[in-house]
Length: 449
Ligand SMILES: [Zn+2]
Image (cartoon, rainbow, N blue to C red; front, side, top):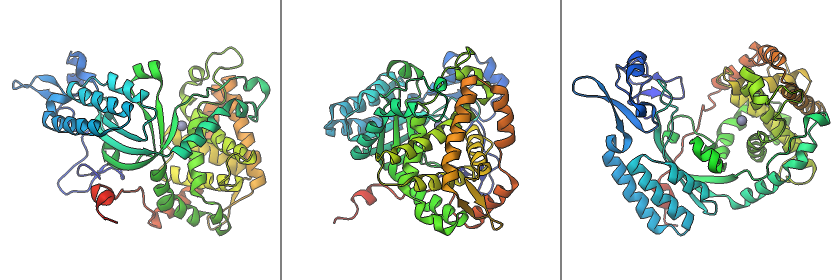
């Protein structure tokens, strides 16, 4: 789980005696490299996602491609990929697996990324490769190998496609003045739902992701966009083991019936969808929202996705499109979700966004906290707060009002001492920090029933 002696779920503190702080360079670079030495090393592939830096015998630096550094492992992976390709029934999957094996051997991933983008019909998905660079704290470029084996949830994916087709109509219903909602959202976004069969390598280390948005190569974004995968059973595990107990601890017992996995699933999924809604160009000639919002861009965009995601879920329930949860379920589960998200702090843009949403709702009377730190919800006020907050965000973005945005975030983007005391109770109650998977061939095939 940790892939080393440092606790990934506790700021990488060493948990094995004799180890100090985790080196920022991991094993991607020589342990004694300095930023000055790196800067002076004039080799084009030094910042490649697929090279490590090593020392020559005379102590000078050199780059080594992953397929050379890890030749034995790469050979083994390629053999397995080719065996899998021989068994694959879907042509797209077969093509991708073979191109991926070639990519492993050459560290040229573009062709196989494009093959993955074209692999739209396969019910089995296999995301594999050196993909994310979260561990490289020195340059944030070196990737780690990982793999996900996934099965497509075709019923949920179809439902999602149907809802995405409704985005242009939902955009028109946004609770803001007409001039702020002239943008026409796309309806072709590639967003599907999967169940996870196996996580391995980087993605199985430390905190478990519940959604994938790949590939990372911007050349592929230009040519074919990205594919987004929502990982349903991983979400369910986090809901059952973490979110439900948090909600039960911090919310009035009458709200327990409104804490529902399906509400969590739709809220999280529509957060992703909501990035494609709202306003992209300022209405006063200041240019694109992204460019003008500067330092406020990410936190306000995340806050927008959060609240418009909830807005859409509520609208789709009212229209009778989402039928397995109520508006009360969506709102209750949304607020419990904020407790889960900010439990370990709100210093990031995402954390700031969560807290701006939470504090807006609190000030609007959407919820109240009693002296024991137990929360109750006023659903009428909560619905008004969703509209009011969505309007404020879209208007701020559309006006490109970065001064207001910065001031507002400063005042409302942080965890209050009161809330911090409640979050401390979550940790004292021993609610898990993350989930761990019990997985592997013995689980899949071990019991002959
Ligand atoms: Zn987001």
